[in-house]
Image (cartoon, rainbow over all chains, first blue to last red; front, top):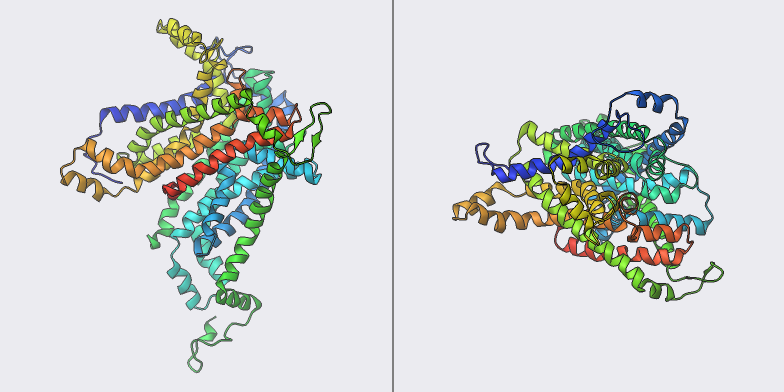
Length: 272
Length: 320
């Protein structure tokens, strides 16, 4: 939907829109403020004083932060890799063919995100119990990959639908085989969508806590570490510092994914 | 490949391709159904076996029961666990959670619509990019960090109390906290707190599909409506809003489902009355009552099943 730039914008609408955006952003800004507070025991506002010492404390005096961070990065990387493969295959198959049960299958692929995370979590846990599988990094990965597939699938299928069939036929007519066509014609067009989907899957996995509490056993990922700090706080300002770090880390994939999908509109433009 | 097309040979021959990859490729292109099957099989196995298989394993457990004396699970088919689900205390948990999910969805739709509408209809150029990022950033920033931010805001010594004091409105805050069911010792131990946090963390899920639906409304329709004499208000309610409705429904799938199953928000910000997610978590953990926990999860599954089916009929999946 587009309109002329000189069209009047109702004042009430502008205020409501700006208020909505402020509602979404002020709480995050507050977290950043609290990372600098000198108050350790409560969430006093305004902070009685400001200091940067908590960044130093988090960096050097809290070794318990690092193993969860590494585990989170590892899990996110593996889950994203698996999701990229399975999500792309599913999108390729479902975008190009029409067959009986296609709608049901496409519904099936959205299910892990449409159903509450707790169901995914407890289902997987009881399946592990029944099959006698011990908790490990792989049980966490299994859970994460299941919903990461959906994210990649959603990104990929949107691009596959825009992909012009003419280009593929032209490539085949000119003598390329299916694999060459995929490598030189299809991949360059879906590449940015895959990268964006992968980035988002990574961010989602890095942040996931509900499914993880059911599939992690004794290990903790960074969100599980944070959860235990929220329930039983030790040094509140250190938690604030880690929160600021997490905000910063997740910001990068979002900006990159935005940049990639924006560029993608020019690449896939032929079919529009 | 170019050697295939020469003057003395026909441009298209059956055996112009030599390599094994070429042959596989040719074979698959000749059998498109096989190709689809090959592509679909690995992801379908993953989702079908790992995910749906686990769901069925869970469903199966809900037909077992817990021996009250030994605390062991009796592996025999029974509906007694479902009968337990219908006891007053458990029904209250379900009702409470569904109410919360409905209110959160409604509030999200009301707050999200103006943002989505402005972004789709009026924002251009860098403002549009800014709107997009302003929605994506909270969507993808950490779930726990977002809850934590509200712990800071709602705390008794936090910014809201400070604001209320500054504006001489502390009587209002105390009055709200004194309301029997809604209130509590402080906002972060009340239903109001839980509600606010839910609305806050799910709101981007509502904005994006509404915006997607609004972006698709052709300008012609709006112009045609105006040309035919409709007031802007009429155009909005008879043209724009019905076309945005699938977006609202798509968004509500997320807000409703996510609220139904969440157990972390009400644990961190809320009172001691349980929601479905917390009941499931305690039942499967400390209580060891997997059958009842499984029966509890059937509730959101059923609700979401019906919800998804209705949403699909209303075309909500096209804007997801």
